[in-house]
Image (tube, rainbow, N blue to C red; front, side, top):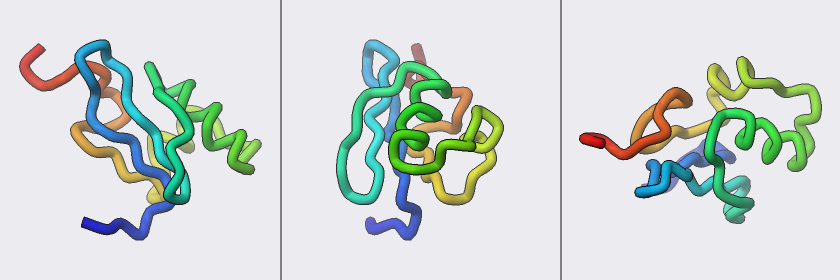
Length: 74
């Protein structure tokens, strides 16, 4: 399914990392909201912080929102 949101945070893996894609390019693995902040800042949104990441409609959180860093059932 295509998304109109330029940032996608994928579901957590076994180690709690979540792949992050910005604009169709994978930029890294996030292990917490601050990692996502770093990725979006490097992509040009330097003024963003954790609250922006948690509330932004530009980010699609798959497999749980910004508070989910373990797989379901773990």
